[in-house]
Image (cartoon, rainbow, N blue to C red; front, top):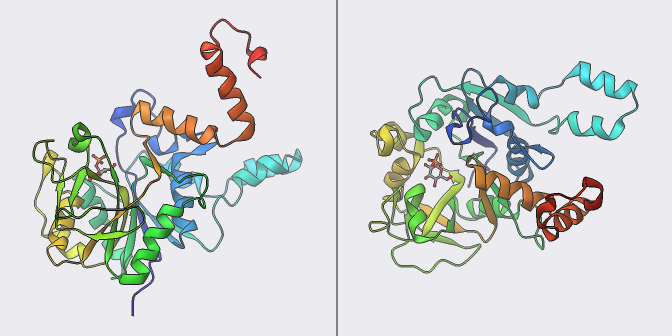
Length: 307
Ligand code: G1P
């Protein structure tokens, strides 16, 4: 019987150096994408696929992330007293009551593979999801919100085989990602393909394909055994990709191609792009953005003329 995936590990221990100085005193995961922190988008993505237990792997100084998902009685009380029901609704019960949020610390910055291992005792031998919160996955408007992640979970449910979401990237960009080798197989969107091997951040000349890991994984618990045997890799860190490469040798790991738009919010351009893309999905903001761009970004125009 294929075990349901109930738990999601979300590593949030990164320092956010690519977004400095914005992230000097503030966790990068709390930077807003349109009207809410990126981490809220990602947690909701996990929940909408059926995840009921969120596990943050965090570090000292990032307590504000946990606070965001906790009650803030004083704020709630004040908003209630002022009759600000709509705003109250956005801060109260951000996630449904039945969802549990747990945090565990990663005391050494030893990489993504090490971060996942920190959660081992909370995973209790169950299959689990991993969502990297730098990445915003924006499914096409014609589909359900979070269609890609829900489909990834369905692919696990149907097969019990680990699933890694991938997307095509331009050739020079392969060195920024984990890249999968499908042994020449031509991947089509929303289907799973057996992975032959994975390489973390290869040079363009050595990359086995242009299919990049984008930060959404469904993994069997045995991957933790492989990770425990994984040596330091690229950047002197224990790489999740290297543990997955060992798992792929058993023939039990698939790549799942999505056609969603993705944004790396851990860098300035991706962050801005994500804000524009999500903002364009709000009717009023869309009008505002269109007039802003029509008017050469509104320079020298009074703000009122842009409404
Ligand atoms: C991590 C993973 C990499 C993946 C990327 C997606 O790298 O190690 O395999 O392609 O996330 O964003 P990082 O961006 O943390 O260097």
